[in-house]
Each structure stands twice: as C-alpha cells, then as structure tokens.
Length: 63
Image (tube, rainbow, N blue to C red; front, side):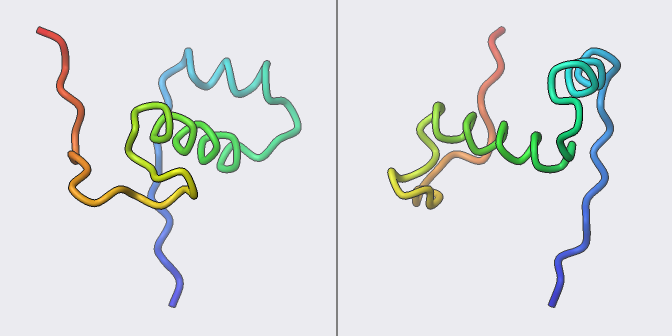
C-alpha cells in the first residue's frame, strides 16, 4: 500500500532557498532531511531515529 503524497505549499522565501542553495537536488528529499533534522534537534526522535513515545504533537508558539 502506498501512502498518498501530501502537497506542501512553500512561501516565496523557502522556494528561493531551495532553488538557490539546493539546486539539482530533489525538493522532496531536501525537505525530508530538514524535517528529520528539526525533529531530532527538538528532541522528538530517539538516537536511532524513531519517534519518541509521548512526543507532543505541536510546538507552542511564543506569545
């Protein structure tokens, strides 16, 4: 069973970063790496890359 692809709409600034800094790379792969690195940095993944149990689903936004 394949998972349906979710469209992601990028703002102009992010699209420009992808176009200029990651030229020649697949956008999907670059974004996937970025999400994994962010999740790891935020402490949502175990050292082997699995999602931690009890992980909050959303980050709080500063007031």
